Length: 386
Ligand SMILES: *Cc1c(COP(=O)(O)O)cnc(C)c1O
Image 1 (cartoon, helix red, strand yellow):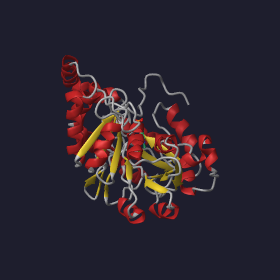
Image 2 (image 1 turned 30 degrees about the vertical axis):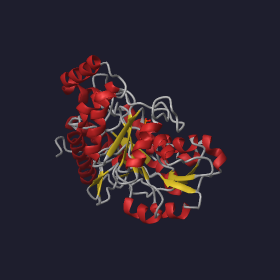
Image 3 (image 1 turned 180 degrees about the vertical axis):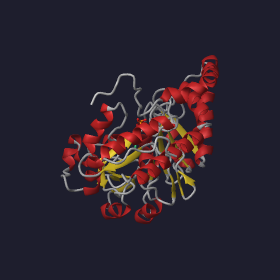
Image 4 (image 1 turned 45 degrees about the horizontal axis):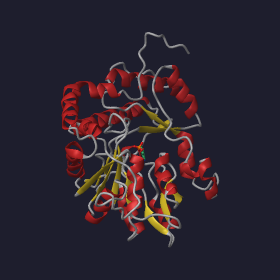
C-alpha cells in the first residue's frame, strides 16, 4: 500500500518533543557545568547521584558511563568471575548477559513467565547450583520481576536488578533499584529517563558495596594511583548528569502519560474486539509499570506481517527482542538448543512493541489503533474514541 507523503509518520519515539519544553532549563544547567570546569564527577554528578538515591529510596547511588557498565560494576563488586554462574532471563537486551560473560562467568539462562515477559522464579529455583554467585532479574519493558518469589527462590544469594527499563517502577510500593542488593540503571536516550548520550548508575542500600563500586568505577584506585582492585574507567559525565537532573523532576509526569496511553490501548483493543489477536501485556497487581515499551503478542504467527503493515503506514513499531539470548551465536559454546526455553522462544516470535512515549498525541495513537484494527479485520474504530 502507498501511504500519501502528506501523512506524517507516527514515530516509535520522539525525544525532541520531550526535550523542547525544557530547553531553557537545559541551557542553564549545561552552562553551569561549563563554567564550573568540572566535567567528570564534580557537583553536577554528585547532585544527580543524590537525587537518584532519594528518588529510588536507597542510601547510595553511584553514577557510571552506561547501563552496561552498571551491570558490569555491580557484578565486579560481587567478585563474579571464572567458575561462577549468574542466572538471568534469556528474553532481555544483550547487555544483561554480556556483563556476565565479560567477567568470565557463565550466564545461566532461565525462562520467562509468558504473561509478564519477566524471569520465571520457579525456573530460577531449578537452575541454582553450588556455583551460582548471583541472580540477575530484568524488570523488562517497565515492569518489575516477581521479587517475592525470586527472594524465596534465591535464599541468601544476592539479587542484582537490571532496572535499565524500569526507572520509577514499583513492586509493592518499593521502587526498582531498591528491591535487590543493587540496581542497575541506563540513561541511554530511549530509556524512560534518557540522557543526551550514554550514562548509567548503580543503586544500593549497602554501604560497603557502594564504597567498592565507587573505587571500581575509577580504575580501582583509592587513594589516587594506589590500586587495590582492577577497575574500569566508567565515569558519569557532568553534562549528562546536569541534563538528567533537569529531566528527573519530570519523570513521574512522563510515566503517568505513558500509563494513560497504555490504558487507552487496552480499552480500545477490548472495545474493537482485537484483544484476542493482539494479546495485551499483563501488569501484576503488585506492580506499578512505567511502560518503557508497550509490547503485545501477535497471535497466529502474523507478527512480521503486522510489522510490515505498520511500517507501510509510517507507524513506528519494533521487535524487542527477535532472538532470545540462549540462541545467540556468540553463546553457542554454552550448549543451549532451540526448545530449551520455550516461553522465551515463543515471545521472541510473537512480540511487537508499539509507540507509547508520553508526548504521543491522541490523534497519533488513534492512527496506530486504526491501523491495528484494520489489520485484524475489525470494524473501523470510532473517530474520537475515548
Ligand atoms: C538498555 C539496557 C541495558 C544497557 O544499557 P546501556 O546504557 O545501553 O549500556 C541493559 N539492560 C537492559 C535490559 C537494557 O534495556
